[in-house]
Image (tube, rainbow over all chains, first blue to last red; front, side, top):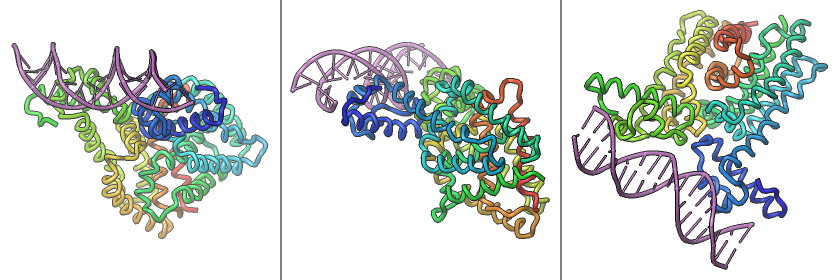
Length: 202
Length: 202
DNA sequence: GTCTATACTCTGATAGAC
DNA sequence: GTCTATCAGAGTATAGAC
């Protein structure tokens, strides 16, 4: 990516990343075309390639920026907080992410569906480490009887699955619910209920 | 699709659908190529196009066959059965589907991520109807106090999200769990526990 | 039924004028 | 910095020999 030096470069770089997010999140890496990205960004294709040297570069820039946003809420689980409320706060942050950044969620989903060719090292490294770290906290909370017993990693998976579903399967969710519903508001309430029941110790 | 009349046609048609499932489920419609499908199927590209008139035709054949398999387990929820066990049986069937037909799950996920361009009518029609029908049963069970109160459609969403996650995000699940784990066996146990806790009335 | 050859379009990327 | 022109390769699909 071209290091932005002027206002116009700033604006165009952002427009390209925005457009790339649109197109890559809908069609995956191979299904996306530079033509389409350039059109959405309001630039010519050669002009796009003046800012990013290749299709790969646009995609990688998006993935890099994504990983930060995506892992951040999990990092914020506080080992010293009240267990159930800490986990529920995480769930709610994830619902907000799904609502406010659905394209990022779908971009991630697409990358994993493709076998995570460009993110496997990130997943096997930093993500795995972070999950293990937070699993230890969950395990301790379970041992202390402050939340119910269950496999901690699967608990984390279920938070990811349930929250991201509302972004990734948005079309289906809306079609089934009908137009009068607010999927993310309802998801927030429902998942609060679900995890409260699941976590509260007997 | 060519109506198979000989053994060789039977075999080739199947090989093409198999290969198409491989490639479409990994790269989505636009990301998949006939070259790749033909190679996986062990045929030349023109020969593939002798069996299916177009790329679209292969994809549509796969989607058509998918919708049946996908909705079937939900249909089998029995209004006269024991509520918690009926729902848990559905969860387990979905876990088995995710384990045995992960490519079908990913094909479906890809189609929805793309905005369901070729399945929206199916979703807004038969799927929605079926969900509403089963929601009525769930609502009745809740009113009778046989399962806990919650929004029934979101309960169904959460079954889909949690079971399909293990197929769609398989790469991530395995990377985070490590090689010594059996994701689907653990998922079966964990989701049994989760939904039992969620559904059992207070 | 299957292959080679090929038509034609799209896609990623570059050259060079302005 | 942006555009027109263009290239090489990949993509879908067809024609026609065998």
